[in-house]
Amino acid sequence: MAYSYSIDDEVHHQRQGPRLREVPGPRAIYTITRCLPIEGDGRVRYRIKSNTENFERVVYEDELSRLG
Image 1 (spheres, rainbow, N blue to C red):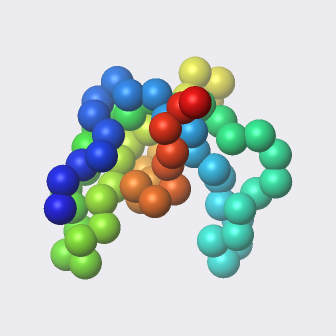
Image 2 (cartoon, rainbow, N blue to C red):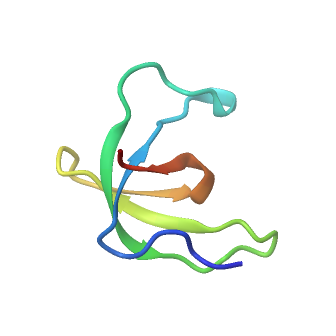
Image 3 (cartoon, rainbow, N blue to C red):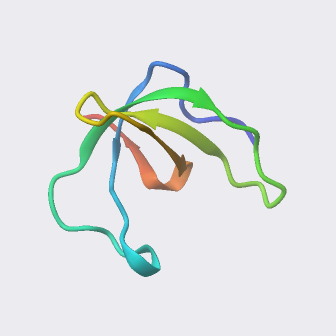
């Protein structure tokens, strides 16, 4: 499986609450800072950063979407 996003790509991330339910509200814009190793089950992970937060998040590819 290949990565769909590259470092420095800007993406939307829909935050998720308990039990993987989407949190209502606008999707935030994040920048891909690192492509993480693909997990044993084939799920692709990324490290992302928002300009409005002081920390990075680790998310699965299916939580991201392209801008536009």
